[in-house]
Each structure stands twice: as C-alpha cells, then as structure tokens.
Image 1 (cartoon, rainbow, N blue to C red):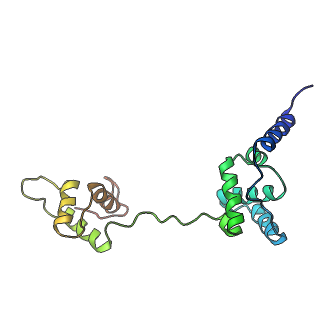
Image 2: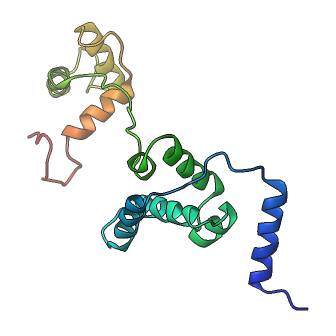
Image 3: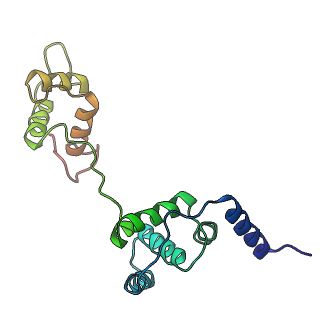
Length: 175
C-alpha cells in the first residue's frame, strides 16, 4: 500500500494524540468572534502577524490539531500554543494584537541632546584635534547633563543630527 501525504498527516495526528496530553487552552469562538475573524481574514490589508493569528484561531476553533495548523500555516507549535493561550486567558483583541513593548528609557532628553550637539560643534579641548565620542561622553558628565553616559549613546545622538557626507537631507549642516 502506497503512503501519500494524507497518510503522513494521519500518522502525525495519531502520534500527537498519543503523546500530547489534553489541551489546556481550547479555543471556542462565539458566532460574533468567528464572523469578525472571517471578515478580518478576507481583507487584503491586514498585517501578516495578525492574519496568521486570526487563521490560527479559526482553524483551532474548527477542531484542527496543533500539528495540522503548524503544517497548514507554516508557523511553529509554540506560536499556535501562545495564540490559543492568549485567547482563552484574555480576549480576541489580546490574541490578535501584539502587547506593548516598553523599551529602554531615554538617556538624554531633548534639552540635553541639544547641549551635547552644541558641545560637539564647539572647539575641542586643549591637546585634541577634534572631539572623540569618549571625550564628549566625559564632557556630558562634567556638565552634569547626565550622571553617566556611554560613548555609544553619544554616537547615536550625533548620528541622528549630523548627515552622512555628501547628503544634504536632514540633520545639522556644518559649514
């Protein structure tokens, strides 16, 4: 008897059933939620991640196993599990949308950045031909603009303001 793709899928389903415990997070959509997801997935302007999450929820609700969803949508099993968990523990919007990522707090505010740029445009200290990033970082601490700051932060601030050589777009134009 020849084995085809359908046989492999069936065997994978049997393996999953035998090795996987009962699902902790079972997706059970209401009619309104299902209609909303179908409407979302039929739009062409949905972000890719949101589209995948909507498809995962629809397939999980239709009774497909995680393995079938993984193979059908080309996503990882943890992705499917996380979407199901966020839906069950939270709500449909929580399952579809990404959580806010806080990021790092800014090291310098706008006033402090302006002062750093002014220092970079001023004459370098005695004994130096030009300002280095480390010299500027030390100057920021000396002026008490920040308690401590790295040369990398100075580089990032200056990169935002000084254009690339040959570029006339944006930033500070030094003559």
